Image 1: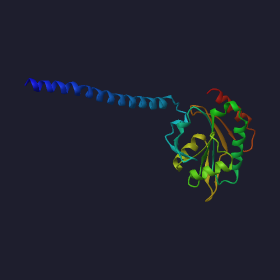
Image 2: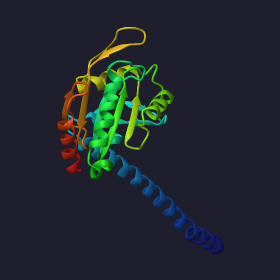
Image 3: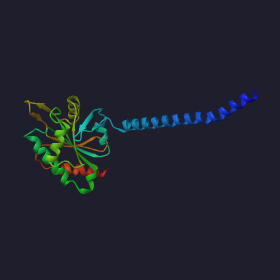
Length: 212
């Protein structure tokens, strides 16, 4: 009997530390999960009702990576909606975006992202967007091309007050608007037109970047 009790005591001495270690490991994992959940909840509660980062849509980039709009949080974001097969307004809009990017002061370069969103996701695959970016000398890290499904594209366009409509199998009519969002995803400036004086837009971008 004494021998049996001695063996039990030895097993308890060996087993209890293992048990406590196991519990401690599980608690650490739970703590990490809770911290991550709190972090994600904080991101959501920090956003105002006016932020585009509240949109739950997912998008594909020209590098075929999936992102959410909230991944752009923390930067000034300049947005235009185009389609790559456009032969009318879009080439002018693209040229205007290049002009804006080149004119913004160098000290703000790392704080600004230039985003071109396709209104023709069926044609504008990530591969097509990648080719278009290279053809237009817009393949640096400051440039981002996005596509999603039709519903997400329509929802995003509505937040920018951009209207577009398919008028033929290959053509769209659409608004010509360049929009600026602050680091929280709130719309702070818009300018409409083609080949217009973009000095007010550039000023707004620099003022927004200065606050970041």
